[in-house]
Length: 318
Image (tube, rainbow, N blue to C red; front, side, top):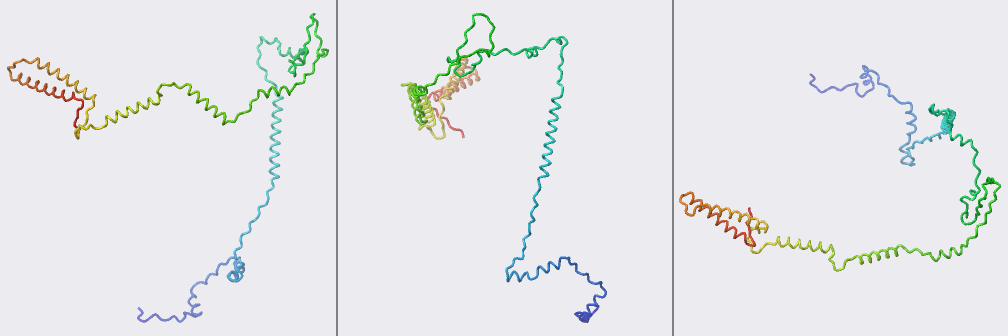
């Protein structure tokens, strides 16, 4: 254990000392420098000075290489050859289709010796043209310009069309002035759309006035009057009665009449039961039953008086 301060290294700071300290170690590796490092260093010399003094731009934009124009001649030649080959193939197929023998349809042995009527008609010579068909669908052919040939008295053979001479009169000139004068009398100048619309509106209005039933209430007024009557009845029904105490409601007329019918039936049953009881009952049971029936009958009569009024107020529950 060292009791004094750490001693000073005599070899520190001197080359000899450093060499002695590195003696046991391997030599330091050489720095790896790219081959273009010298070129980059020469280009970058004076960069800061150029920026501060001359203002020269250090950044050099990359030069875009122009694309070489493409030669489409080879593509065009290839497409032309493909089209020519396709056309040759198509013409060859058409020729093969034409030279291909027609398929013979199956023919029955029964009609094998029967000749075709179509072939017979084709072998015959066509009939000579009729002289009347020379002016068919010709101008003024039906207005007297053509003189029909009279019938021959004898059934002689008709001459050929070349020997027939047809006399055609020249058409009469048309008087266009007189024709235009007749048209001007019948001509009416067109009216503007606004005038036509106004005239149509007036005609519709006159038609509605003619069809209107005078002295009769219109349908829309009848429906409106019915609606007003229903609204008035609803308002009267919902109007609170001044005689009605608070916490009560007025019983509807239909419900009141129905209650009266029930009370009348109940009163009839109680009277029938009271008539069946003896006038002077002797037993306790008969006496109590008679008293009960009379009590119920009095209650029914009192309720009948109450529900016979025009207004009956019923307490609202809750």
